[in-house]
Image 1 (tube, rainbow, N blue to C red):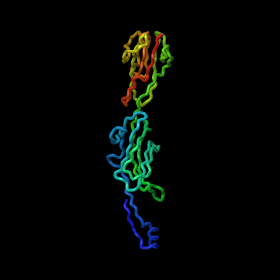
Image 2 (cartoon, helix red, strand yellow):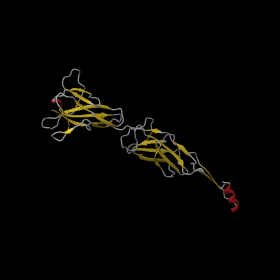
Image 3 (cartoon, rainbow, N blue to C red):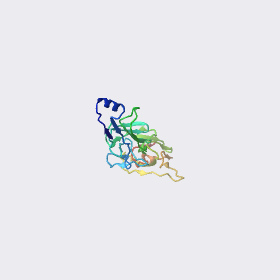
Image 4 (tube, one colour):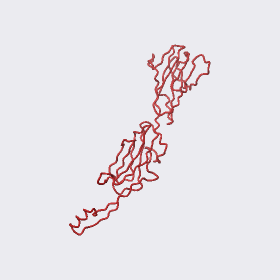
Length: 261
């Protein structure tokens, strides 16, 4: 801001000068973002990095740090307004700060973050004397999967949720998954000894060859697992590992005990 100060000779001249708006002349420089660091993304543990076109990977509920930086420190108070789409998520008070930073936990799969900086001072029509709008940053929020088995279960003699079927019938386990697609699935199994003490390691299931006559597995790498012509050998625990682009696999969040009668 450049001020031109004019001292009138007397009160009469002062009125004349003020009426003509020559008492004080305030030149407002155009606000500009820093070309190399207009909008930064960081979190609570890493060094800020420039926002990238493909966005960032973020887990549900995770904070993301957002920083806006002007080309130079403003010489008049400015206001930073942050938007997620059309919703205002933060508005600073009038400040001389060159940067504005805050932690945001409301990122979703369709978040589009932008920031506008305007002068606190306005003209006669109430419009800011200078405004700069940043580019929209589409954050690629990849939410990790959360999975449950939706097949109806009932408590067994030990109080464990169990799917009970008769020998020779089809065991079907279905899942419900939330998060950001695309998902990959892998079912696993481990037997339950007669004494109920589980010590075996999880075994990765694969689809059975054609012509299998007992415990024929299909869907070992899909959302629904099916085992046909079950025998008592199918009794055990089953779980599904679900992975998406966030690189997060949930190992034991979908577990069921199967009892074959």
